Image (cartoon, rainbow, N blue to C red; front, side, top):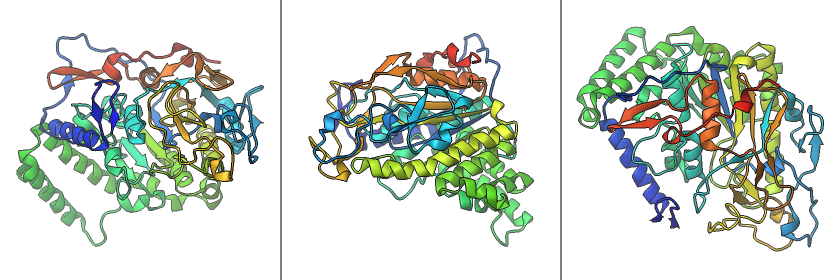
Amino acid sequence: MTRDPLAGQPWSRRDFLRGMSAAAMAALAGGEPRPVQGAEPIRQPEPTADTFILIWLAGGMAAPETFDPKRYTPFEIGVPSETILCTFPAIDTALDGVKISQGLEHIAQVLDRGVLIRSHVVADLGNILHSRHQYHWHTGYIPPQTVAVPHIGSWIAKVRGPKNPAIPAFLNIGQRLEGHGESEELKAFTTAGFLGSEYGPFNLPYPLDAVAAVRPPRGVTRDRFARRERAYRRLVQQGPLAGLASDYHQESVVRSMENAYRLLNSPEREAFDLSKEPKEIFDRYNTGRFGQGCLLARRLTEAGARYIEVTTEYVPFLSWDTHENGHATYTEMKKQIDRPIAQLILDLEARGLLERTLVVVASEFSRDMMIEGVPGSTAVDQSRAKTDVMKQPIHYGLHRHFTGSGSVLVFGGGFPRGLVYGETAPERPLVVTKDPITIPDLHATLLTAMGISPRTAFEVEKRPFYVTQDGTGQPVQRLFARA
């Protein structure tokens, strides 16, 4: 049980899920979301990007161990924990005088192609729940909400529409939504919400198996498949869903099925087949499911996808969710992400796609050896490696959730090349000291590049609901200036 700093009331994970379930049911019953009545039409900006790839390093990627290195302290028994800011030495990059963390040598060599933001600040939500912060980052709104809030990918799918009608506009690669401790919480934001099912994600948890998801069932003829589609339409319109969902949401479910049928009969489905890739290229990406996901993202970008998310996957206490043994875990995680991310940038550039493809590398918050949340936070310390001094290697690493600063990489999509934006303090607490950029403003900046005004809104439950929190997000103009 924790305390919601906005409402001033206690809440729990169960309360969070209950609130999200109620919002989802309300969305089904609601009518068609329409442009806000009585308001002047929003003038959408000229897009500088046509495709958005989000590389999601789920679990809390520590900025000091990756893209914002500080003073390095090697492991030694007896070293005070409070003196450790970074457990990896810094390395040179393609940008003169700019360093990132050891283990990211491939990314270091493509850093001159993009923007390194070191001043990303996320909200202090009291006690830290990964799924709650991930909900905030992906939707722009702090949960729980009374409205089923769309994922940023669904907003892009709705406002920009599909780039290629045969390819799902929103593809979600690498995240299993079943079988682990917070899968239901992840489902709460991996959704199109009130926008309707047709704008929801096409989920591909296993990239190597993606092609199986776009093949007609074995032995099913075209006529039989058409009969199945008609039967499904009747089920939606006359079955149990008809009593729960509005006409708009019933039709949205049917349209999502029609979109799937179109893909199954399209030659573009070959883009999902990683076996078509030359072995030499496949091997450059193949560090596991994440690397395969980056390769699949490149193929789907070429095929005309609008929004693609590739994740290292969030499962509690795995991957970047390091509550102990952080240094050893980060060593392995860097091996997973370093070459595939860099290769994705190089391949998009070589194919002439990077200029119109926005590639963003982000996480829900950072980490610190000593501070949970921000200085002065009442958040419960969740580290499982609490100790005043180093006693064994499991204590070595940045275990606590830190929301006072974080790093984001942005490549392509009209953003400048070779820019470092923002700064953080050189000593603890490692808070932002220059050019802070919040989630609303970061979203406004990225959406503007995609040709979507941060003031874009639809009328939901007789009130406007905006693509950025209450329409307050402001794009950072400096991030559109050519370097």
